[in-house]
Image (cartoon, rainbow, N blue to C red):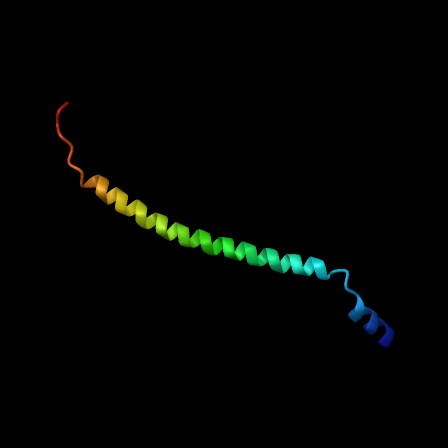
Amino acid sequence: MKRIANAFWSEDEGNATIDWVVLMAGVVSLGFAVAATLATGTKTVTADAAEEINTIELSGGV
């Protein structure tokens, strides 16, 4: 049993995969955070632009 435990703790073939999974999870989380921030700003700018467009008075020259 001790031999199996030592072999388990000394094995390191899967470590690179775990590192990549953790790294990609961080990148995806950062991407979601950036997207959420941009979406909030975009909604504000869009609402301001729509309000400005609605207040423009058109001349009736047609």
